[in-house]
Image (cartoon, rainbow, N blue to C red):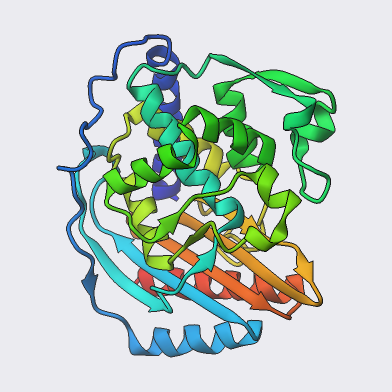
Length: 330
């Protein structure tokens, strides 16, 4: 309980700092730039054979392809430096999985780089036209609330994109980040190679055949979570905003969070495809989970090409997260 409370206060403290820092155009003092020299120590490998077998058995329930990487973060979030990480378990860690809305996290992180550089303010207002709203094939809280478009702040767009997984908000943020090339350049600076951002949500909703073009490996996804945790290329306030919105995320309550003890803090981002001919291309969730022993776990679980129903697919993610949580908490 002390760990949960301390993390909650940490997020609140970081976000409160944001209010005083975001109104200036000057770069934040503690931003680490350029990003390239700041690298994470390699993940040490000590996988538990029993846990590995348990994960494989759970994954088989999806009757598709499942990818998992989970590491225990042993360092301090507050340090802003590369922490040690111990590999807990992995399954198909280098396979390519369609990200779907998981890609809204790297897009949002790339935007925060510009915020920290003073090029964008969280209070800047961005106009979203009716034509910018994603098609009805995709869920869009923004379209429901603002059917004729709206003018929103960058911070509001971040909340829509992360907490509510809104596609129009994500597309607006991608434009602010410099388009797919800008996001990809940011990932390259972080040293993340196996994560590709190419298409907007608007493009994706108009042509489902491109869904495999935005892809990531489980290992790369955890590397992104580590970058966020270690505050590489991010100020404290920017990290705080992202963690707050990830913790408040509404989709995927039965995925990573599904079987964890009540009150466990999970900062996460989901991704979900449609179902075509009985097969669902993607049911994903990646996040940072508070552990009762004072550490944190970064975990990515991807379920691809599964004929199982939603309850089963989400149950696979929840069971894997719980098994990893139990092992990491010892």
